[in-house]
Image (tube, rainbow, N blue to C red):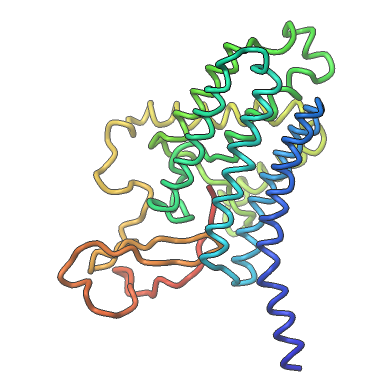
Length: 303
């Protein structure tokens, strides 16, 4: 019975990484499809990769199988699926005939990689209140869904065909800058019915999911554009860009212990304290928040 339970536990531990590798599979296939000229397949492959990216961390938290390995694997896979793959698809579709336009793809990939590295250091896998800049899956899906949106039934003749390469290149640079920005972007709400606000958010989330299933080509690109514009407009209107404190504005006050250890939440819910020089932090004891609770509880991960 014990051996059977051990095998079951090993299977559960492998499950989140299997979803992460599925994310990588769709990211690689997106590039293969683009090289073959199947830009519709490439676009939806990146969307599927984003769905698996959202599920892997949630499954790990649900099964309590978080690990440092999972965090590093997730970052590397995201760099491929939402950095290299969308940039390659966009290059094949819009820039292949121009000799130096590949630099735009390089700049976008560099922004994704820098964002993921900054995420691991500053937010450690969990934005307490908001994403810190545009999430890389959002940027990747935006680039990927340009083609399905403009080639949907009736849209391409109405809009005069696909956008010009100069327009797409400018769009890539804007996305790169927004990924590296300090603009707070709202989290995807959890499904909950505990109060009126949570119920409304859940109903809207389910409505969006249903619309994606019914008419993905018409819905995804405009919806993601509105999401990006909303975060930028909200920050501008509220003056957040001019009033950011010296510390990370996305962390709660309770996320730093008395010894100067900022709680850094890794992928799949593993939390590790990042120590700063302090005379009180030399004690070899487990970091605790100011509220006194241990820092080993799971937390949500999104990039």
